[in-house]
Length: 498
Image (cartoon, rainbow, N blue to C red):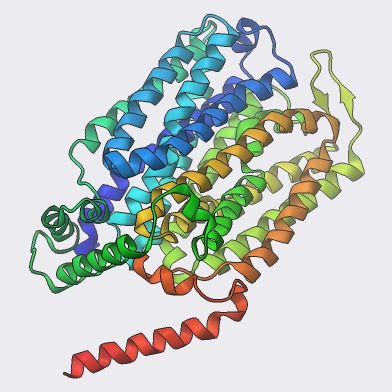
């Protein structure tokens, strides 16, 4: 790690915000299958389950929209701390729920906190990271999400053996712990240098950068140069730019907003949260009998998700955003297509007494479906999982970054909400047809990424002005960007010779 040890440390601590999000998602996927939870809340049907799962994402949508103003006004650091408090309140309400309305209200309040965290943490990480490891550092957010999912799956698996309402209250209560830890840890973390400079606190910014990049040496040439680059960018933005949401609709920010919204929407349209919320139901539907078996398969799914994210952390700054997304899209599409064809050709759908669907698949096809789910998770974890958060956090200028990311993150939660609401119904009614829909979307995503998304790896946040002022057709604009790189290289060599 060398010079970047402190940056990795700060990025890892803030990534606990992702752990909180992942823990809640993984928690509910297994709780939905617990007998004591079903009995306590009146055996909710597909619509009821959809409302309960999606109300968290409705809160996330609202929270992410509010986070833009909060992060600009009160800092990224303080906003993360406030989100921890709000989330803890929501988790407490859920843990003590006496009826379904109280549970739904608690999930909405917790969602407000998760929404703020999901928008603010990637910005915080991107602003404390040097450009050559920014993708890796922001990827820690996604890796933390997978750890949250993993821990939640196995806590649920252990708690489902408890023969009382404690089987679901204990896991819900445990999620308060990481929120308290993150709140306490953030009191010791620095403000981001870019936020400090934007608030005329340049000396503090240089102190923070010296600690992050050079072991406290404020006169390190790279530290001095980075401070000057940020100050110049902020100066130019103040002279030429507004700071309202209306600026997002103006050229050249409008293009970046569309790309940011689209990439966050497509991350949800991979169908990942159908898998994460409803995998136990999918495994049962495919013929995996018994609660223990389906919950155990979900636990294995969590392990695979966590391990498959590691290559993205290691190589996203080498392979790049575009290639990684296109490879991942093909993997997701292929697994969905195989699963749809195999299921559609062999299913013999019946409805059980409790209203659930049993596809009565041949044993070999059941195993094939489970394998395809695992391969899909691998494809997602190595691509869309981390890059869906990395790309929007790095493409906007400082003066509008928080507001822009509040919109892009809100689009993620909006699609998450819609998918969480309708997925239980579609899984029951069209079964394999849902897989086919996701396959078509992922095949289309390959072309969209190739045509419209410029490469951003190893670029400073200030470089993005050059990257996004050319043609909207990214595959046609590579020559212009290459010429810019050649000119910068030549200028740097000239200065070195002098």
